[in-house]
Length: 234
Image (cartoon, rainbow, N blue to C red; front, side, top):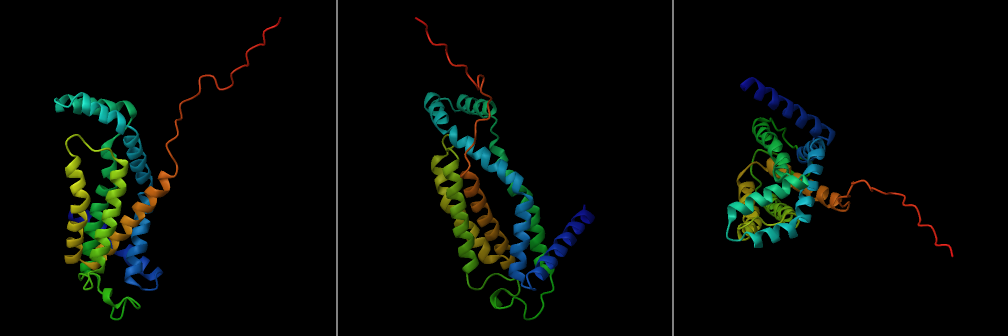
């Protein structure tokens, strides 16, 4: 297992060095390019994620009707909602897959940034982030992490109907998650915060683009070319 993880870290290091070189030995731009490529690789899963959320949003009225119908029976309500999702081909867990696949990349990138030998004078004008293994001394990245997390959460909330009994908790998470992630970004490596902000902005742009194309009902028309009725003859 250690050998596999070591090979994975070597791959990430090679990618970071490559993209930093492409960016003119700018560490910040190197992390940004690295993040964009990772998100492009995961783009098909992102499309599945957004389409699943769109379907869930369209099922919102039906879900609210079920909540009113089974208000005193949460077990029955969960069964009915699960049956509705199965009937419509909706998988609520599909939204977690892109994030789960990014977790080992983010953890590996953290180790790469900690072990990387930063050249003196690197960064080319971005002197405050020449050493990406150090936390950001300006708090700017912590603010960007919190702000991008908030907008991503708001976008997700608009597409996802509230779960039964979780409405207030979901609203609270819209504010709590940006605060928590901003605090973590303040304490962790600046390079990891740059990755997270870039990934969030990519996610927001990707979702906005996909939402412009609504889900089309591909069900075939049973009578696509109906014949005109013959005129009555006198």
